[in-house]
Length: 232
Image 1 (cartoon, rainbow, N blue to C red):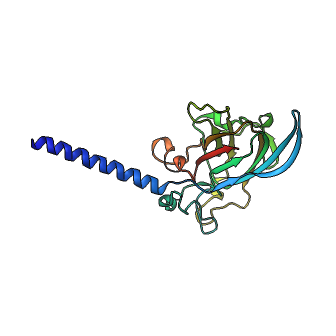
Image 2: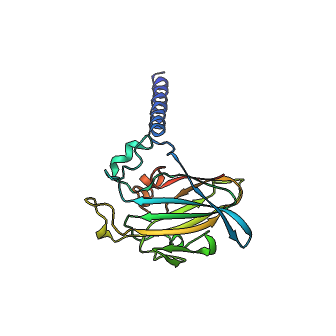
Image 3: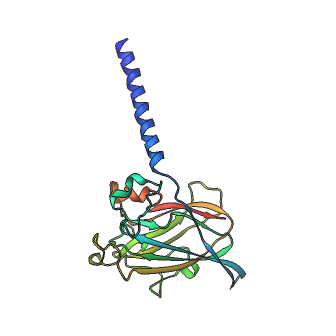
């Protein structure tokens, strides 16, 4: 009988611990404020006139007094870790059936990708992007800072959508904690077409976190290196 009650007590304690972890995770991980693309009028395409829009993002190596990072109600418990992050939000929205141009200013350093697939441009118009004004189709897999990769939810019934571009790394000596933001960051621009509405996820595929293969920590956190991507 004592063993029975001990087992019951153990289960209750276990459930309480799991519930506590869930409550903590829920309290510390939320959805960042929406960042919607800015409409830029109509453009001519080989398929005919199409609406266009633009979206601007930055990637920083860590938060600072200059750029506070995602500390306002979104994973605030992690703000002191010095993690890299996308800014000003990771909750992104772009218009459906449109030509969208994204500009990402990359301030962080980087290193070697585990999979060179992510060093190539996927899903953009003509399979290209520009880096500081130069048109390229890929980047040196040993000198990548982050990636911007949009993909389906598992077993999704919505339109297929896949987009991935590598973001070149800045020199490690140019990026430091005392002066974290380089004065000549890498500026990446790419354009893609959207189709029908759908909701997708996006993340960075460069191992810039911690734990297993450095894909933990900020890699899993909205507000840092992953988020949602909505086509409306």
